[in-house]
Amino acid sequence: MDIRPNHTIYINNINDKVKKEELKRSLYALFSQFGQVIDIVAMKTMKMRGQAFVVFKELAAATNALRQLQGFPFYNKPMRIQYAKTDSEVIAKVKGTYGDKEKKKDKKKKAQEPAANLTKKPVVVPDNPPNYILFLSNLPEETNEMMLSMLFNQFPGFKEVRLVPGKHDIAFVEFESESQAGVAKDALQGFRITATCAMKITYAKK
Image (cartoon, rainbow, N blue to C red; front, top):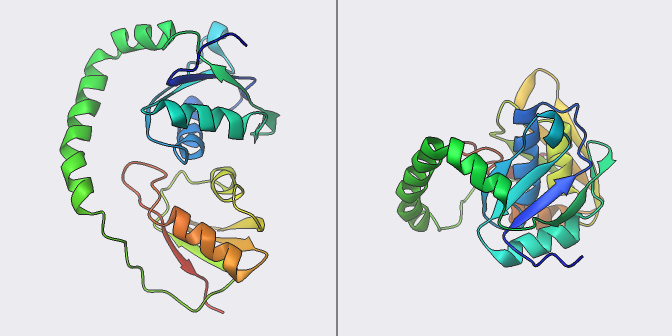
């Protein structure tokens, strides 16, 4: 492995039955817990099937994600992750074709940044007494069990995710103990699965 660490990681052995948009959302949910993800490139061409590139803002985040998620069972296939050979030709090419999109994104990001600094105050969500089951709300429509499991199973004591049939915006997550549930709750409070939906987490009512 003589590839030098860089901001872009290359993933292969991805389940290629997953739709491109869902794949990008799931990768984003999984990798953004390690740091800010600037871009995700996943293409469905024959040459690029089952592969993706994730670009991090910070080098340390890329390194951390690579170590932590190596062999992670993503859609039932262990991910193989390495640093991209350069901060990647593929990325550069894609940036060439998606130039306008990127510019728009950057503008949006810049506009959001000052606001983000103002909202650093902790989000106060009215809560119930501690419970080993967490109640999630304000989830985006495309949320699935896989995405939530990936987010929560990095925390000790994780048992299962339960979605509520017919209601896409709420779910329950069960842990072995109240304290373990509390750690996950604090860490993921306000986590954005998509740009617009900040997840709200409370203890479930007993």
